[in-house]
Image 1 (cartoon, rainbow over the protein chains, first blue to last red):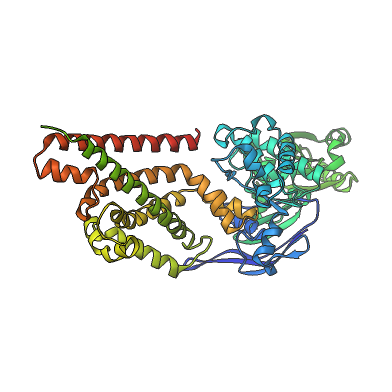
Image 2: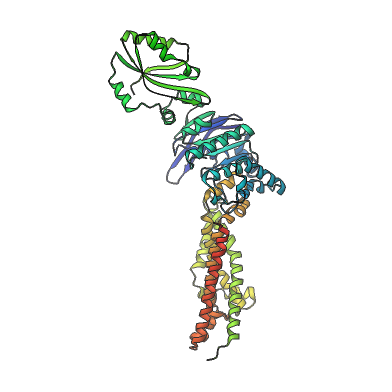
Length: 343
Length: 216
């Protein structure tokens, strides 16, 4: 649906050249919700703007819906853009126009008959839950409502792709959730492919199928959200995952780890999927003469799959602890890793 | 001292005529000029360094010539257009040349204040440059544009006072020739009073219209 190949974007400030995107490759399937995460300045905004050519890449190719956008004439490109909706961080609504006219704008640009405009806008406002606000002005709306107008407007021309540029970054957590729900609903009901740019890992966890991590203009890690969350490879991805998984050790636990000796060993156990439900620890306590002490733990759900993370302390004879570890390693319940954790 | 009311009413009409016509033509010159000054800028819709540089220089040139000098300097041009260089109609030409570039600057300022995000949204939905200007830039700037034009109108009322130099008549001319040069204090007070009321009225009207469009 969306394919970026070797896309680079270099800004020439006159004094020096700034590389915003460096040989980015991205492939997004139809119907996917794809997230791109990165710190500010990583090049996220440039990336999403290169998809609908609000910014022209310095090199590379951008294909949306089978059309190579860089080869289109200005007129063809304008037509192609009607198939690509865009939602902005700061909504970018016309303050001088009513909610109705704002949503109708893309249709008015292509000279859609009045009746059709009215019908379509009414339908869209109902979909985003703002039927009663049609005659209000953007100034009279809350941030969440403004973003709903922005979303309704982006859907007016029935696009097959929706680009979200930090669509929830200006909103409070509760409103963020309701907007994410709406995006998910759009993806389900209209089968619209969504590309989300964000700096919040929570957004990725909440609705994305796949994720790419962008750092200094390069995609440093990409894969399914589950893969990246359960086994982040790069430090930057690990930091992002940590920001929402809360698997960082509390200080008190860290002190205990420092004080560990052969008879008191601390391990990190990661459960994935069904194994989260299995009573591994209580089995160990029954079968082996060791004390099991859970120091820290949490269970999160990723795309419907439970994901557990426990820090446990085993007290007992070193020999017995080794047997426990063997048992854990050999258990057929999917246990991802057992490791002595230095912090 | 007897006040010649007929004379004052005639002068009032002359002022209104000069200001209205010159405003109309000045807007016709200033609006496209102001839009061009914005869209030919670096990174804008029709980025064009040369066009921008030329327009910018021309606007600055007209803005730097004092009105009284401009009025005399353009006499040949005035004669070409109106057929004469004297009278109320003749005064309209220098007034419009004085105000047009000024309005262009005011319009340029208003348009530059429009949130660049709005333009980005317009481009993302595939609007043509024409549509971006007419449906996004101007409507968003309209409230501030009206305030700018109000300022320009008041500037024209001031300029019309100098139109006496080319026999344009009007209240300002009356104030100078009768009020000042003939020491006719009553005429002076009346004409200045009318001008004060006129300016107050124009500013209030501008404020009200601008507020109405903003709809807060």
